[in-house]
Image 1 (cartoon, rainbow, N blue to C red):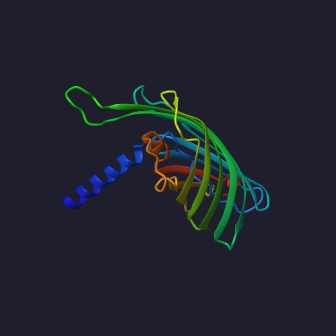
Image 2: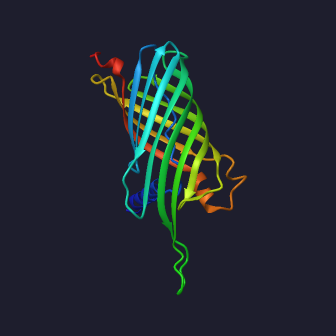
Image 3: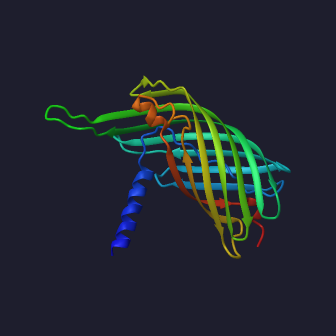
Length: 253
């Protein structure tokens, strides 16, 4: 009885950590389109554990050349605590199969977005003072990024990994309308993913599970004394579930 209890306790602690965040920055996951040749396309729609939605479309107009567009949205939330985000990105890259199974590729691109986060952080309380502090972050940013990825595309299961390096520049970053002393940051973002397809039917459709990290490599060495800057640069873990469609396979039986 103790074993299952420990498992479920650990699971919910992990889930709570996944959903909790103080950062106003939440990136899209790196691109890793699994395309074999000219004329093929891939469309992905995903949902994160916190309700954020993401979609991307990739196409190869010329052999070994790929173009990709992606966007994300998180709307809604309450009046006292919320996270809202809209962002888009465009990328251009290349891909090549090393053999019948292993694919390698890379992209470079540009993205932009805006996001808002409001939450309260509890401190200690005294008889005379309630030390609960409310933060109301708002950010507008654009970024340059480079992706590298590898995938094993054999059989019903496709799996692989990707790594993104981003340079994020804030055109505006505020707390309650007051500017924060952070103009840019570098983010390192590795990702692992798996895709599953049916045995015979619906070869054009796959289920996808992806998990990625995002952190600022310089934060540990040059940590800011301003907690609001540390909030913005905090490390994040993202997990998403989605569907992958290959339009060029629609007519295949």
